[in-house]
Length: 258
Image (tube, rainbow, N blue to C red; front, side, top):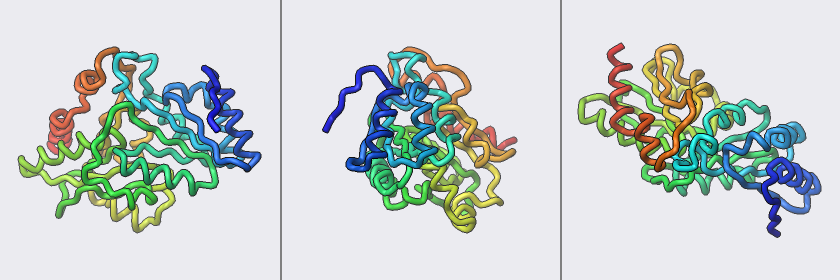
């Protein structure tokens, strides 16, 4: 059954919790990611009660475009990733999204799927690896730099790696689909993806940079958003704020020179 809640995000999530607690149905609720602010109390209760409610939160970045800063999420992913017992996915393309949905259905607790407004290329993604939270999308021998990205920023990160390769710089690219699932992996797997000896690390995500610092370390760089967005076509907003292969490449070259 489909329930139309109206513009009532908190009530929607609260009712979703109730349906999940009843147990007869497996519910999901959906709205824009930026409106997770209104959902916060119910999301926290989902996590506290460990109910398997799925939150589908779309329009997940400044690429929302013309709707402007009021509808462009910046800090919301940080807030959601900070909630204990909540699993957050930000998949890149249809294949990772399908795999994330499967993982959400297997999860005994609450799950967030943060999805883009725009289409995202699925090239080189490996949906069978999503269960581990993060995986190597493209690898090289003896990488000079490690690039991590999620969601819509994975394709420009891959293109930046190709541009760097043309200049003799070797880059490993990792898709960070779910930090929570990645943190559940073994120390050996984490070291395989993010070797301690590889200290030149760059994270790319069109949102607050705060969650990434534990992975980039003192010698790394986060290309993110520490300010509000702007009203313009989505691709122009991304270009203006530096989420382009060319800018990512230049930022990495500056990091390697430091």
